[in-house]
Image 1 (spheres, rainbow, N blue to C red):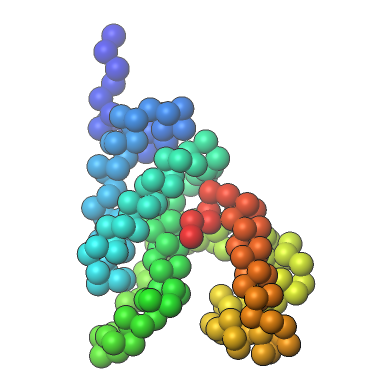
Image 2: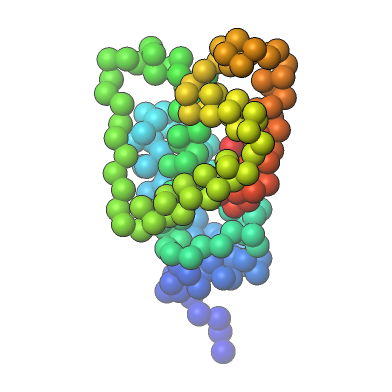
Length: 188
């Protein structure tokens, strides 16, 4: 009996095949969603090259971590949330900040979220806060100053009365611990 055509297999079943290393199932999932994920990224960034890079990074990451990623809801919602998370990380980077200062006349995009996206984002947010609260107090404070308050390394060093190298070390260690703790969610 020939194998069923992958085009007719539901996403969740495709994901199970992908977990077991089925490259054809992965290619099918890529074909189903790359364009819509690109549109999400592009709509927020207005930069085709960066949007393509972000979508590609999400797919590569998901393939590499397929055995650790647990998708409890919709596969499509997981990928949309992963792309949005990657876009947010990009927008927080210094180079993106400079680009948006040059484009100040253009309105910044708003995120629209449907129910399955909301569930995936809520799950991501809960895991993020759990892991953030596991960080040592001083490390957590430095990380929050940087990522949530938007302070520069120099501003954090001055605020906390520590050296800039200590701030860099604390941020690096915090990111490492968050990556380890978030596993499949953290894709910086």
